[in-house]
Image 1 (spheres, helix red, strand yellow):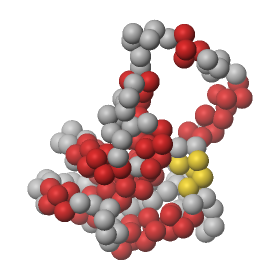
Image 2: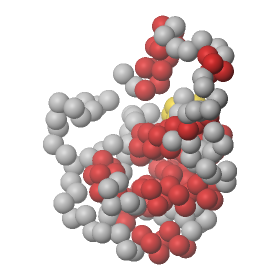
Image 3: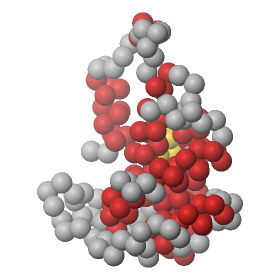
Length: 190
């Protein structure tokens, strides 16, 4: 069951907060996402996401996930939602960060010459929209991401010269290979 299907199931079950429930939370101790976000511009947030994705504790695992066939857009959704919950972005900036984060991952994967899957079902459907963070993601934007993933060329302006320079210092990860099918992996053909 996809994350979107799980979300809709929770919505329909009624097992969710009632409207206004957040107004009863302690105002002296708000959740991180209830405070002002740390980043308010796409440029600053993009630099943060590049730094975040290239940290030594994150980079090898993320690249292994890409090498194993995890769709880029699944990783993007997970990472952005985690950062939203941590108070880094507001919901609007989180949506605006989908493409820059995807291009960062494509760039990093290309540096290691990885075969990349951009979104779930990429090979099966020709004219379908992908659901990203519960919202339809335009087909033309997906095609641009696919083209970048296949050619390894990220559109100009998506990465700063500083990001490109820092990428040269990233460690080589020679042991990346598609993982063997395990009980916890996504079934083939889905």
